Image 1 (cartoon, helix red, strand yellow):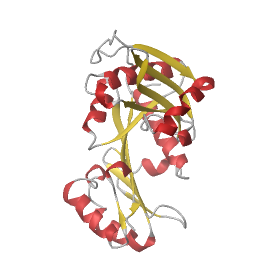
Image 2 (tube, rainbow, N blue to C red):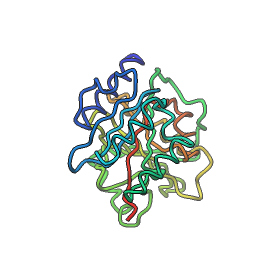
Image 3 (tube, helix red, strand yellow):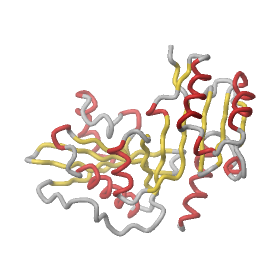
Length: 248
């Protein structure tokens, strides 16, 4: 796929995931949609400078009035975000840092990872789906919780071992109606800061691509370490998705 084809594919996949046609992401201005019963009270998705806001009828007109002419990629920043948060709190809702996700894709061909160290003092091993049960003990011990989540149903994992101990894990699971293989990574505290997560993400992204799938990396803007991993491994921010959390 070309760079533009990947972006178009992403738009179609996200639109399908929320039950809409890709046309909602092809507008030249912000689009406002009333959410259905049982849907999120407030959701914002933006590709570039325009946003799609799906909001409860209680705040839909307010959103239109405040954000119709605000660049979509500025609504969740600075004074605009403060204004939005204040309004949401009237309904006991709030946008938390980890409910404001930035999704990254490798838009250009990526043939290596010069930013990552070789880490020759570690051993790396691929766990195919039929072997992932061997990592179940980490669910119970709540270790590598950022990379391993029983509910996500991982498809593949790569582990890093030091002196026989697993010290870091990168995994991937199906997302957006299986359009992407979504990468998650976690490292034991004593092994962080040395580029090991970057090395693992580069490895698993290459593995995903070699199998004919599209890797996706998602994090939030305030997670500086995770943002660095994304950029160091050839991933670029493509879209932002935020939704609200009940404060009660």
